[in-house]
Amino acid sequence: MTIVSNSSNIGKLLLDKKIITLAQAEAVMQFQREHNLRFGEAAIQLGYLTEQDVQQALASQYNYAVLQKGKSKLSENLVQAYQPSSEFAESVRTLRSQLMLRWLSEGKKNIAIVGLSESATTLVANLAIAFAQSNEKTLLVDANLREPRLHQLMGMQNKVGLVEVLASRADLATAVQVVEGVPSLYILSAGAVLPNAQEIIASRFTSEFMNQLEGGYDAVLYDLAPAALFDDAYLIAAKVRGVVIAVERDRAFTAQVLECIERCKAIDVEVVGTVLIE
Image (tube, rainbow, N blue to C red; front, side, top):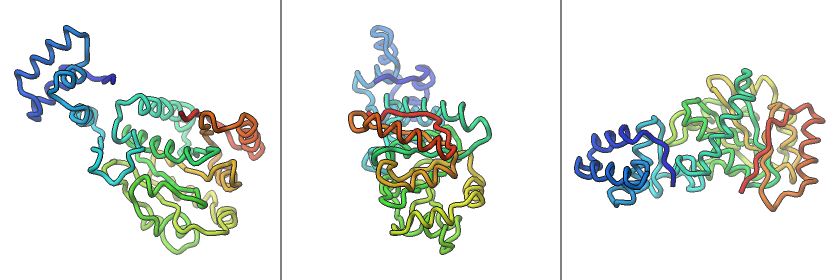
């Protein structure tokens, strides 16, 4: 594990919180010099700290939340929230940075993640957490009205959501939920699963409604139904105007990816990038 931090800062933080003693801190510093390690790595090897202790210290140092496994309703598949120093979390932050530079910096707030399978849902949830960890007020919208999963990942109910707002059975303020343990992250779940999802999207998902969603948020991320299975993804992508295509290794055929790109171009949707999901 590689921990990126300032050794003196994290050491002082751990001392202040009485997680380690002064004698232990001195032993750690000696060990890290001898073995060319980060402070946290050295402390873990010496048995003074657990990886979770280090994660919590880093969270405090850089002002973002780290969840503890077994103590949160959020799925452990949300690595960004539980292990923000992991290689996977770093790759998600890289994607976040690219989107901020290539898309959000132009004054755009909306971006959709479209996949050829259900695995894209986990990616967009982790990406939303990464945005929130950078102090961007983020709204995560479950626009997969076929088989919604975001509420399950977030440990939330799905009684009132996007469908109810579109059908004027609930207002947006009531439907949006705060994600527990992740400051600056909000979710609009899908709501009731209906057989006429396409008709609802086509008739009610308007530019005015999207402007309403954007109000008060720095970034709005959409999870879409798998493009290989349903046309719903393209209906919403046409409104959002920008998509990231998520491709799962060994499960997506080149022809499917190319078809997805061509269909996006045909409806004037910019493919901001593609992501390979391991």
